[in-house]
Image (cartoon, rainbow, N blue to C red; front, side, top):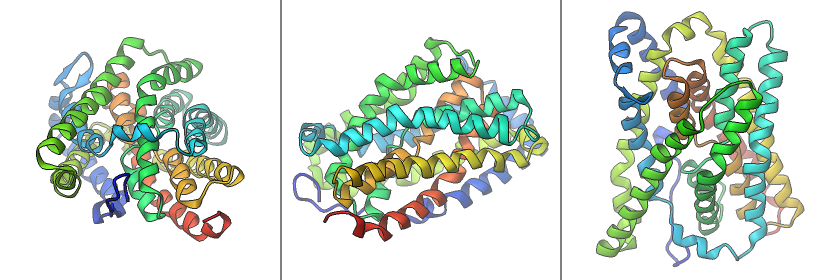
Length: 351
């Protein structure tokens, strides 16, 4: 239940459970459109402002806005309660995850898979991996927390504080790691991307939450209002993926094996980060209902933000954007395995 004693019952829905299948279908549809009707992605690609694709931006907003509605920033008042779990989350997400992602992706893309991926493509794929690593999950954490019987009130605090840290830490971390990767990106584009795809939907979500709760009550907001956007989020994600894959047709058809090769370091990173946070929670005496969400929030990614920023920085047709969409492809099956791991090891933790 939440801080006011209300039960929350958010499990994984049909779309979320089979997200990998939907992404694969979108890839097939997108590639067919890109091959047979290339005028469509070309025309949509010309609709941009300051390098930002207008159709993709609209679809990203449709995806992110409903997520921001679910985050209750009033919960930040509870930060002082049991802060050890929050410190584990923050340290894992911002001092460990981006840098291990860079290291693991570099190892696989430039060394292990050197014979399969040209250095120029590897650099772009690494940039996409860096964007995923610097964007820990927001919305789906509520699902993973529910499936592991996590403490919903504590999960809200973890997500709310994480969203605020994104505003401060995302740009400098991405700028630094892309600089190390010899990928030059202007600060202005990074800041503009964060304002466009985090600040605006975040403020919109907060204001909407305040107005609706004031007029209709928290029960209506959580049980009825937020669910009005469930289908919009699904449609937005699927259409965005079709457009991205349509723009990526030549890259995909030229290098189909690369989809699998990109997925390998992303999967290794996901598993590693989960166990770092999960083991740290065990060492510091956290209960399982805090340890499991702590592991999940770092392991999964805010892939909507990563995709949006990759497109803003490198374009819809870039290999970097493709790498971030592979993150969408791998996320759910890997996270469902980790949910099973967390549930089967509940006995390791104090109750």
